[in-house]
Image (cartoon, rainbow over all chains, first blue to last red; front, side):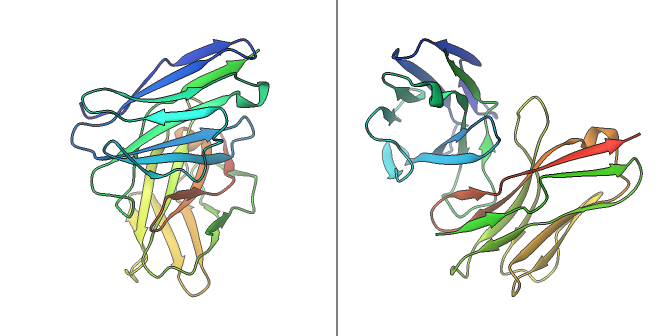
Length: 115
Length: 112
């Protein structure tokens, strides 16, 4: 399709529970990016993929966050043992040609609330 | 590391007037893109305008234009004939060899 599809739109988890978010990039886009937008609007880069390979993971809190992009499956971002500060909107974006390009297409985000 | 700074947390403008949102950035890269994204309350990220660093001509998209000053590392957004639908958060973003880096955002209010 021509849009980046993120599911679910909203997710509520108790502190300590696992959360899993999904992203289907635009068909033909080989780069996928995950960003976290906290409630004060700041965007934090988490991780990027080139196809199924990790391209840049410098933003990932490695202890509890993990991500995958497997062939023929939506990409996923998983948070083990969620904490209150993980509450945020998680955006996925994709691009066709690489990092330095005309701009990413963003999904509509998944709002994660940890209670 | 690249940084992007938006020094105006909030701006307001009268409907039909013109407003300019400021953005500065810091980088040692020579090849990069700059963007302005609009984020309405729905949280959807909408690309407003882009500028390639190697182009001297300022980008324009209908009522939106930029003032790109490469030497000063400045990239401001001008919105002409402001409309109520322009009300949103606006994010300036820098894209170099690694990833997209966002500024802190400016909340734009349009007064009818």
